[in-house]
Image (cartoon, rainbow, N blue to C red; front, top):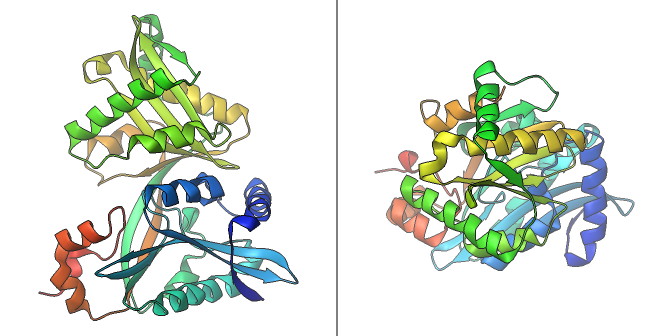
Length: 343
């Protein structure tokens, strides 16, 4: 097999590869793996997309999407920023034993070719796919245990309490609409921005919403209205079989109406009708937070994943940068677990 670096000219082939592997259930392909999301990250200045691939007799058999971030402090090569688990080598189970170590080593060599390499960070795939292969290939590094929550879109009823909340929202006059225009995007983003400010968490720029609105096949917007005003919104990203819960927002003084629950119920029904099988809630800060317990209400189950971190420089260099220095140089990236830095 030959290791190659894919370019935009390969997007059609890459999309067909992802569609086939994800649609057949051969790998948990996510919307994040597709060219449209790679281009979004590139346009944001997150870093330089580098999609490594293996070919056999000219045919794609495995790909590893990564982002290379160069800063004055050094270079980091990482799985796609913003969410995990979304990284790792995308291939069939039959190819994994050879493809996973080969592409991880190819990525490491790419980073070592940089003048000032700092760390390589790889998120493992959903459902614990090939976990032992990553541990074997990256065993010399740090491992951070994380989890996401997944709901099977199998038609199993929600809990009695959740069904009551959904009915109540509709009874109180909350309606759901799906048409996207500039005014709705601006209002949606205003809700999202306020939610982020209230929670003290970083927010994505408005350009993310604008860009995703131009990808209706992969990005699905829903809006909830009550008495003529938008009270909630939801943006999901669709892969071949998995829907990713990407950007929810709710007007603070309308939370009692449960508009967000009405939107999720509608979005899950739409996804199930379109043949999607899983709802990926993404990670939660911890098991004690309200976000985790909210996701639990939707028949979700935990699915563990790992972040493998391989330092390619002395750790004291990372320690001198510290939490603030690393965050400033590499926004949106997980570079190294701060609590494991020396000193």
